[in-house]
Image (tube, rainbow, N blue to C red):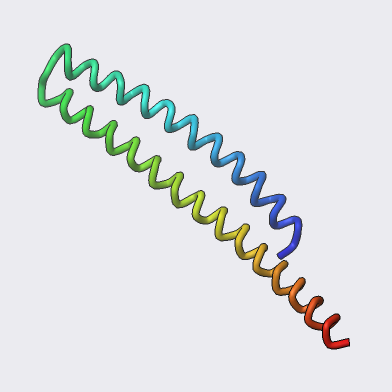
Length: 96
């Protein structure tokens, strides 16, 4: 792979990770508010609100995990390409 692909992947990765972290922080704050509402005023609305916030936090966690998997796959693919190039150079130098 090209070095520019790695540079763009790392910059995009940093940007997306920052956005996901901010969204996860906001979701956890909303989750805390939903728990407080449930403790102070137990009603079907507050239970539904709490479940929605748990679902949102879980969804953000899954999105973050998939994003990390994609980034590691890109980096691993680049590492494999470099290994094959290095092995070819090593092999050709051994033949000489």
